[in-house]
Image 1 (cartoon, rainbow, N blue to C red):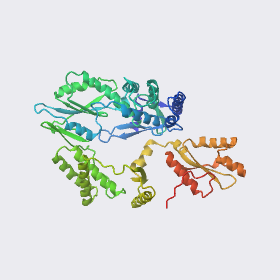
Image 2 (tube, helix red, strand yellow; image 1 turned 120 degrees about the vertical axis):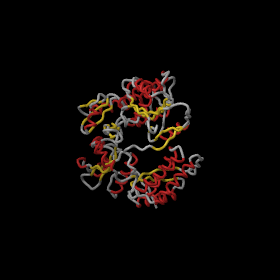
Image 3 (cartoon, helix red, strand yellow; image 1 turned 135 degrees about the vertical axis):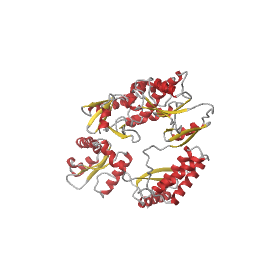
Image 4 (spheres, helix red, strand yellow; image 1 turned 60 degrees about the vertical axis):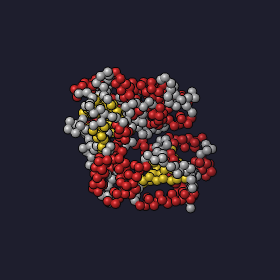
Length: 541
């Protein structure tokens, strides 16, 4: 708690007296979207997609970096459900698909290893491998400067992204998405004055474009430049052909790129001449770089236990995933064999039977051999629908199998795929405690009932807005005798009244489709006592 409070005392954050600012920002966004709609810049569909109604305030929490000294917190501001979340997702998708890819870009560990395979070293030269880490990149990004850089990438010389907005309009939307973002921590309200919030869909893109701009300054170096400079977000891998003292000089120079930018330096071991980057350990042998798996000191060797309440296919899938990782990262047959032997021992310690381990490794090796082959699309004429259901054991597997069987009979060209979700986990138990409780979530995105005062009939409905707002609409419809209201129809036909003081919340659901399904199920359960009709029915025989 104290570490989180210390972070929030930084100059990037400011404590607010109430959540009034959050409502003002939501109103500002909706008014601007309305002006864009009235100017025919966006259509009603896009306006509805980006509009915010009864949003929740973003939530601050911290994840400890267990592999670092004193366990510093990684600050995260979850924007899910906030006024800017849908807008941020929309803009992030558009910019991500069009942004220029830097030469230094590293997608993941596999991409990093593939890039290293292309590097040929000179046997007659001395190489020093090192890594730089940007301290608190997201928090320290100068947001106004980063927005300007983003706009320059998008609109110069011509617009690169497929959005209907001019540069000025895009600038306004970016400001609404990522600047002065209000959030709560426990019972206090704050806003982020500068930096981008890890947890906002736009944050990694804005931070990356700003880092690209900083990297352009490498071109100004006439001497002491790194031979290789590869970056994954805020982690940078370098190879130098200069003495260590000159690397320190290079380190000092890049720390002057920007007042907000601070790099830390790690140099390869003087004993093994190796250095870790992501989950890859890099050494070199004559003219080639050699890669193998790297495990942090905090690695316990604990994976999904064999006797855990998880689907059997997921446990075999875990083995295959680990095997594929070994083959794709380890660069020599000896290293692969060493890792496979270690994997066998680790899986035995996790309770896996030897025959299951052999099967998983064999299937993983088959998948590796198939990677280079052309995949045949056997389902090109079929539609696939994915469902996620809770896993309670074999009963869940049988249920999924029966649903697939019925669907194959009813709709031959439809493929149903099920994924199984853990019922409870430590994360699901403790994360809500860390985030705190948002009372507003209990008042919106719900299915509700309104009882009749004079009989046993009931009205069941659903809304994404605050329940109080929806109740006022119903009462207004009754006052105006709206012809489209089932409540009014019942009142006029039977001379009855509805009891708005005894309304009930029957279910909470943020997903509109699931909410409508729940409304239909709950309506059907009234056995004819509901005055409104079931919206959706399906007959399975």
